[in-house]
Image (cartoon, rainbow, N blue to C red):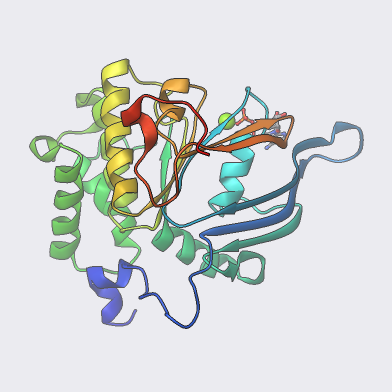
Length: 266
Ligand SMILES: Nc1ncnc2c1ncn2[C@@H]1O[C@H](COP(=O)(O)OP(=O)(O)O)[C@@H](O)[C@H]1O
Ligand SMILES: [Mg+2]
């Protein structure tokens, strides 16, 4: 681990190169995912071509079983496609070995799941520090970044609480702090509000809106119109295919929910 990798700056995005425009965060071409073989083959994702620009805010919608989580797992390099090409920040992920994939995932993507996935009997602070442990960062520095992330989500008064002492909404905010502590360019959230009441849902969405306004790419999988209303672009899946892809606000604009409008942008 190099010295610079121990500083928060190591998590920052590389400076843009004026002579070469930045590649999209995600460029998928004809990506498929098939589970099983022969009679039990499930085409969870059919040939899917999708480009996601930096700073976009996307909701992925579709009925249960339509392939949303499969798509998210591939977007997040948690799973490999059966066929097709996938580039993350210009890098062809299929050319990387497992360690390099884990590294790019840890540094560039923050994950949020419906069931929070916090480590039980472990404080909020220790949960949020966890992604930094693998980076070899010094303890004091880890702690400082974790406190900052928890403060960011409004939980600086709950640093030493363990998950079962926190409400569902608070647990999800701890999970968001854990997702952003490495300063990732992209947040991927799979049904992040699926287990939350409306107040906690609003709190979580307000945080996602802020993360997007500061330039992070946000991809949220959801069943709920209320959640999708925050996104600048809504992609709908049916039976493993993108059946609709509509933009509601420009990539470099504000999330559209403030105007309470679901009219497509012209
Ligand atoms: N590990 C797996 N093995 C076999 N089939 C799977 C697996 N994961 C998902 N599937 C199937 O792939 C399809 C898409 O699933 P999924 O991506 O989880 O949908 P969604 O998140 O939209 O509910 C479903 O038919 C599901 O049963
Ligand atoms: Mg799912």
